[in-house]
Image (cartoon, rainbow, N blue to C red; front, side, top):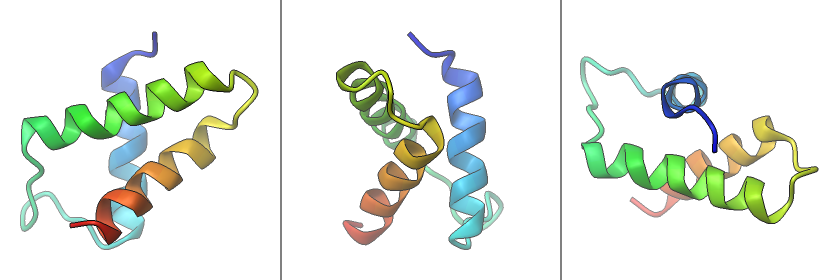
Length: 66
């Protein structure tokens, strides 16, 4: 399993590219957990998948389905 703190940092970096700023838009703990769980599950399904692409996909899905 991936280190969740490391994964959150990767997700935070991608969220920032989409205009996320923690001082104005705080994610709830369950939202962080959902994003991390999605990336982890997708990586387990396809071990050859690029983690960067999985994080981008998770963040895009999260933002477009808000």
